[in-house]
Amino acid sequence: MTEVFKQVPLYRFLYFCNEVNLDRVVLDCGAGGEAPPLSLFSEFGYSTFGIEYDIKQVKRAAEFAKAKDQELNIMQGDMRKLPFGDQTISFVYSYNSVFHMTKAEVELSIAEMKRVLKPGGLLFVNFLTTRDFRCGQGVKVGVNQYEQFEDDLPVIHSYYEEGEPDPLFSDMDTLYKEDRVLERIYQGDKIRQGFVDYILQKN
Amino acid sequence: MTEVFKQVPLYRFLYFCNEVNLDRVVLDCGAGGEAPPLSLFSEFGYSTFGIEYDIKQVKRAAEFAKAKDQELNIMQGDMRKLPFGDQTISFVYSYNSVFHMTKAEVELSIAEMKRVLKPGGLLFVNFLTTRDFRCGQGVKVGVNQYEQFEDDLPVIHSYYEEGEPDPLFSDMDTLYKEDRVLERIYQGDKIRQGFVDYILQKN
Image (cartoon, rainbow over all chains, first blue to last red; front, side, top):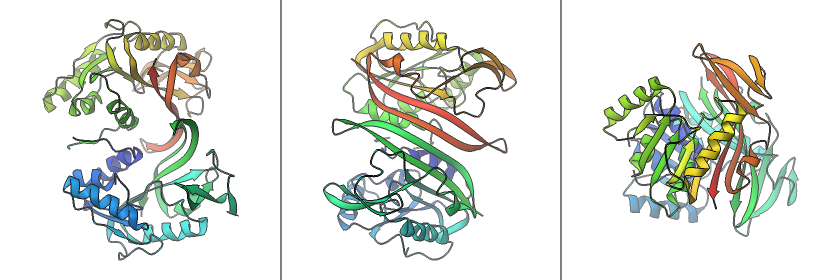
């Protein structure tokens, strides 16, 4: 082994995926960046596909994949309209990504993830919660939805109350759900972040 | 890679350890069982040591290590009195283990972990919280301390209020702290568990 991926909750998702008897095909929605976690799934023998909105992040992921000599198949695209057929993918995840949209767009994206997922397949998705230190900052664009800044660029962040995402998955089985508040050091400051992670199975 | 370890928070600890410039030597307090996570550290080139109170769990870990052809050095012992000198180990962790004792014994054990840790070294330890579904069940033996049953055997479980473990680490730097409530399926039932995880650095 060569590296540990910082997207730690995806190790749990991989553990769950390994237990399911479906083709090892996985799709990441929001897949780009300098250390794409699809690389971890590739190491475990999965065929990987990724959708990433930001072309710069697509390029960063491509450099990583080239250095590791992996074919991760990360392409520019929009998770609100996934370029895959119904029920074609065994495993779908979106890590620290879907909440960079309004809640209406989040709903569209999750409907898309469920559409492409095979019956019996697994979905991982996580959300920011209202316990996050930044909830309430910036220009309000909806209920617990704000325009904030990330790396000096404006972005939407949607924050969810406890249990608020549950109805999005009322047609799925919840295998695992984790509501977590973490404190860590970020650029010299202690920050508090709130997330809720779901692992779901399609009926 | 061959397997994913179910002790997922230890991937984060490993990520932190890999960033510290100390000898790759790690000690697990409560190290036994059928899939000892020291195996993960061994895969990343760490010299490993483990202490385990239950001789049956020592044997299970030995079978695992033999099958993987790893030298994990897991021995029977008591984390309240660690058989290591002061400041001899770079990285120490105790995962889902220390809370199987009264709070007074937990305090002793953590003092021992801090004693053997090198300056600049890292400690991971986690606790059950009072948000766990079993808090309050069984025979009370102290404040949020109960005798309960695990695999039909009596065990102590100590549960901590929010922030209650913080003073145990007042002489260390908190690099990461995560308070989490998880829901999962266990033997056909949905259960709710509460944990708080710490990653700390010795001054």
